[in-house]
Length: 515
Image 1 (cartoon, rainbow, N blue to C red):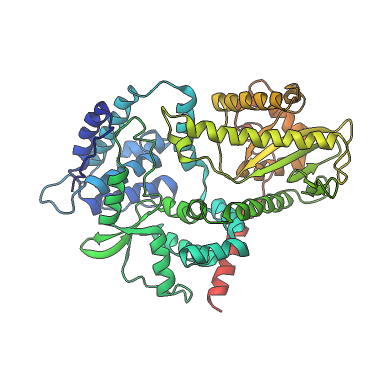
Image 2: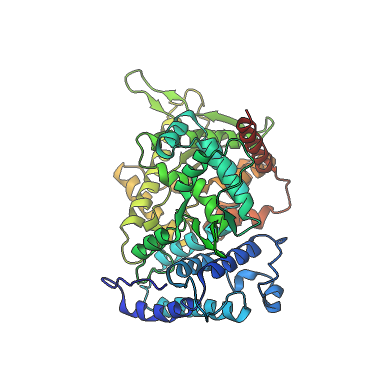
């Protein structure tokens, strides 16, 4: 099976380079090749995973100190998509990825294609760095257990549960019960026979059917979707593909009707972060999700910072009866400093992550972030004028404005400079001196960095932690996780509350399912 090509609007140079890669993939058998993708995905993620004995693996590859030097999870995602589009369902003579040389030839052909089309990309450092970060870092930072616990905690509200039931025919608990059950199988096996043999009472036929409607498509259906999406242009290796929406594939595997999962991580993403995109257009979802994210941040800080060293203050109302205002979402303070936290659940658009020539999505998302920062400075100004009755102004207290995001926006170097320029422009428009940026430098934190950073702050204090980065000429340009790894790795014990959280979620869902 080789996909039909849509060349209207395509870059002819890119398409010509693509054909060589496609011809390599077309020599493969689809079910066998996807099973090899699954095996290498598991091998890259789990040090204890044993490669199936019928799959040859190079001793040189095993000896690498970092296997990503040769193949990565994002490489496997591209290969899986191309196998679905172009590999055969049956051939008398074919190339096998189970043989090391077969895999090496296919991977090298893909890398050659990537290198060749890099020469036709527009040279824009801002865009290229942004795309690389979103393509590669996402695989590296989204550990399964923290993501599961964090998103379950945020989605598990009465309002969002009702939206899930209306949109998918599943409650939040049912989505997570199915997700955890399926992932636990696919971490051990490539395929699942149909019908699905469930020993969990809550996994009724109707619940499983609705979950598969959310996560699974037949091979012909998925092939058609991917074919429609396929475009031969400079962003080929960064473009979205619907394996992320449908990581489960119903197909024949070794002649049996099965559901396969080439990349189990994509299944985890689908029922965690992917649920956000599924519900995003529903009426009331954005507000409900934003409120829940804000409440989650408060719980995360309280969990990371037990004891009395830090004080946590939630959003308050102030002002006159006719002009009531909301304070900043959270204030974390100690004896000499305070962090003013504004929570933003909005995720960067996919256009921002992959754009090459069209900067519209990138600029719109940066503008959204700049507006959040401006709002922080406005409310801090009102605090300084004594309008925060619940948190009195103190002359010597140092203030740190922070925007917390649910998804890592990867803001550093040129991307950070672009947002800074927008903030300066917007401050000028409201007649605020840009000197405020020197007096109170703002920060943008990914929620995972906040969860780790607050534990360090609880040990050493706000000012030492914050100034160690923003006052250092080199560190100020680093991402927060890199700063913490460099300065505090191994110096302080970190709570394993995500493991406890996962156990609690699982026990809760299983307990309900057995009622």
